Image (cartoon, protein in one colour):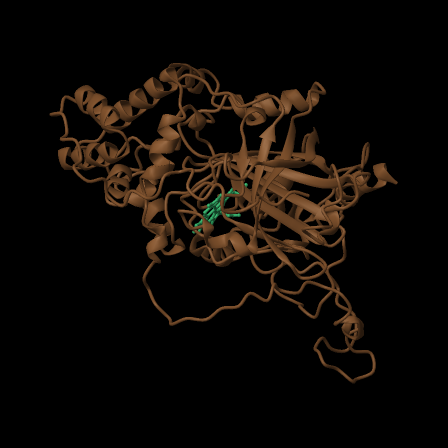
Length: 535
Ligand code: HEM
């Protein structure tokens, strides 16, 4: 039974493999081909004939082999595996895949860099994507996370600007996979909410040793919802059992030159050799009533919940034990979407998350060629997808019946409508009221306290690496005013840090800030005011 669950996605994928060994080559219409080397010509030295359908079909298919790369996270590596929960999570969530410790839930994971193109180096200083698709009996659940627990911006409206700034400069498409350029630091220096994330991005976290040795984070606060409809706020973590390791910047540069596929190869070979990467799923849980008890806003994606305040409870383990059969079919065509959730999990009003809920499906409609990409084998749920949607480019499903609408009293109509209200996903009935506004809550306005908290959590050598990173990256920035603004922001995080970076950049030492901007309440405030939720 266990094995069966583990293999269900694999079995589904097997049906789509071209396994015809020792058979003849045919055209796509099934006609046997007698020569794939020579085109049909008029005479031995004459022109190729238009009627050569074997040549035309072969060449046309080749001409259309590429699809657009992802607008971000273009470069990645994927793996199959399974997830098993340690204990039933019934008290806090009704999610079926979090109940049975004997059940192995099939997963596909894609790790990625964010900035670089598909052919860029694995070792760039960058955030890493950590996206997991759980193929559950209740449908696909996607936990689309990063290896850094916070994000650059608080509102999805700013995402296109952030990405335009971080991608290569528009006139010459330089630099390809690096944050060492004016447009990126210009944006960051004008966007102080990004300073916490920038501290992580300039730390050793941004040059991991291996995809097997980095943490993953859901970043936003999500919800668990139990059978009684009670909601518990939750932050998701992935903890690698090999620990968290980085490489030095000098090492990263050498590796990039010698083997830009270093992380891909490491993941592939570890799995081939049976050293299966393992990650524990951790959750930080906060009772709904305690949402406002922190000195930061749980809806603000530039904030962590310090683990001293709410411990990370490890609730299950993911094992990656099988490499993909085909990079394009699986790793490239997989479509993750934070909006793919299952009963027992729900969203919060984090304004970054809310915007992501629109963006992923929208981009995949063009990247994967229309509205039927859920039918691509790697994206298919192992539970059935049954509804009245039909037609569109590349439709595979043959919808039966005279018509496809609901409600429907015509004989031979939609067969599934009768069961519509039995079970199924129901949205958490959060109470919402307010005026329509385009202003961010003041509770989002402390940009610096957690940046300082992070800097202070680093060892002296890790701090030195961060000073080196800032000095290297800002040293590439041509415009003095951008460097000055950045050093000014660093002064708000840690004065000594800004002095050291300024000295390395040959700039005057910045004045110590008289009054820190928007510094919030001490990081341990609120610690005694609420009880973390345990299962
Ligand atoms: C990929 C948008 C923030 C993690 C993508 C893609 C888009 C996108 C358009 C390409 C998807 C595709 O082509 O399949 C956004 C927007 C964001 C945002 C609009 C903020 C408003 C985040 C955050 C995280 C994240 C906060 C981490 C928690 C990822 C990952 C991928 C991705 C891991 C790659 C998934 C894969 O491997 O296929 N994002 N993103 N993104 N995003 Fe975001």
